[in-house]
Length: 197
Image (cartoon, rainbow, N blue to C red):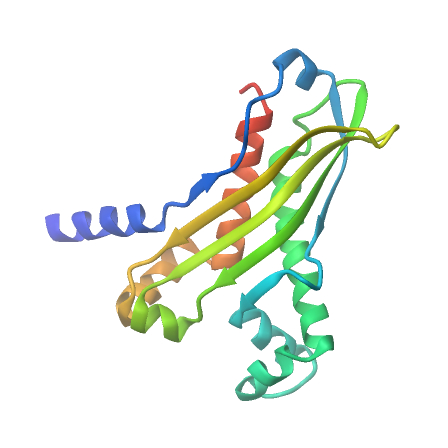
């Protein structure tokens, strides 16, 4: 029983994300004046991007075998599909964390641009241990004037897992999909930086 508890705690520590690059907090009175109008997330073509689950999702979406997913994912159409899918999932996390929390009078937008997304494949996770990261930039912009209010130039989140077959299965079962987990960590850390409480 105690071994299971210790194993669960060790797994939890391994799965915790590390976030950096948030910069100095804004004046709370300024933040209270903000009203969130929109969150946008972009994964530009030049983004460093490795996401095996995204490749498999693309293969399935066009009725092809997952065995072909790596080749299909490398095509321009595959890359476009995966960038859009990643953008949607990261945006969902930011919407969930920020919507309804900024209720002032000054409309603002949060613009997130991803520079690097790396989600190790299940095989890599079994053999080498899990390694996940997201790096990007977040701009807070006045929605009326387009004036930049604040920028987080190096918004980064990393996470790992235990490795091995059992560890990889437990990682997915306990912590969920790595893309969604990283997106949630990124959005939560940004919310924690932006908001007073």
